[in-house]
Structures are given as structure tokens and as C-alpha cells.
Length: 244
Image (cartoon, rainbow, N blue to C red; front, side, top):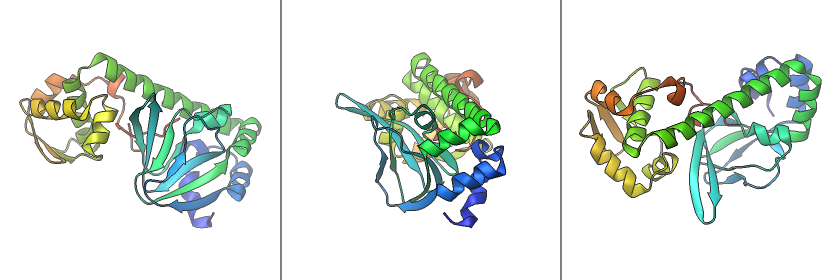
């Protein structure tokens, strides 16, 4: 990979605290590649050959079972995915495919595990990232199980607004069918929820959402940091964190 790509990786929490020799060794065997849209990078059930780091573009994480398919999250730069499978040398629990033209750095998973054993600071950073991934998915599960569909949509709109300093207008970052899948709804149920939420301080025009009465919307969503979590910038809730 090019030298000008390395600083972005070095700033990631996973790589920031490791020793310089460890980082340099991993960068010597890492390589960067640009992939076209809708290309499958990872298939669930296969073993992890690489740790992936997205530098540019976006990647969609999906899961499938018995003919059903769902969106688990969207990863944005600069972020790693899927760390847990690399650390455990276990099969991927999710698939990943590019949503658009994307630049991905790949580091061999076996070498990542060697580096974790040798560099305690790197191991601690990986532990923190895995813990954050676990907490992200606990919040996601609580959101699905404790809120009804209207409450989930209202909370999602508030979260997206809060990321933009409580901007009154937002643009949905994913297609509505993907949003429905992530929020645990059918497209038809999402359409009904969009219609219903407009009685609670929101107007929706296509992918543009305008909050006209934040207090009324919050009364439906009842925001809770133990469900919605802190606002960060890399997997959208679709949560903006790196996904483990």
C-alpha cells in the first residue's frame, strides 16, 4: 500500500497505540485495492482471511438465513470490519459488499493475530474495539425488542439529526428498503410508520426529512443513551462505529 494511505490507518483507535515496529510490520504485508459497487467482499460462513479497513466509499453488512436477508449496518471510512472473526479465527457471521466504489485496505488475519500476541497495547486496543462492537449490538437488539416500529423510526430520525448538531433537516443515508430491513420492518410497515410519524412533528418528502416539532418527536422516541448510545462517525444506524 502507498505511504500516503498509512496515516489514516495509524489514526484509527485499533492502530493508534500499537508500537511503531508492529505497525510498520503490518503495513508491509497490507495492500490496498479499489473495488466496484455491489461487490461481495466477505461471505458469511467463510473463515476470515483478512482484516478489512475501509478508506473510501461505503460497505453494507448483511446477514441471511432460510431465504431471509437483512441489513446489519453500513460501514463508512475510516473504519475496520469485521474484527471479531479475525481475532477468533472463526467464520464470518455477516457478509459484506460495497455500496459504491470503495477503497479497502486488507491485512492478513493470521498476521493480525501474531501482532496481537506480541504487542500488548495493540491487544488492549483490539479488546476495546471488540467491546464497543458488543455494546453497539446490545443497543441495536434493545432497540428492536423494546420499541415498536414507530418508536424505532422516530429514534432513528432524532439520531441522524443529532449527528448533524440537531439539524432540523436530514437526508436518509440509505434506501428506504435498506432502512426498513435495518429497523426490523417490512417495506410496507416502514411506509405506514413514515405516514404515522408525520403526525408527530415530522414531514417526509422522498429521502428528505424535516423535523418541525422536536419535542413531539422526542415524546414518541423517548431517547435513551443506553439504547441510542453516543453519536459517533463510522457504522450508521445504521450506528456509526466500526463493526466487530
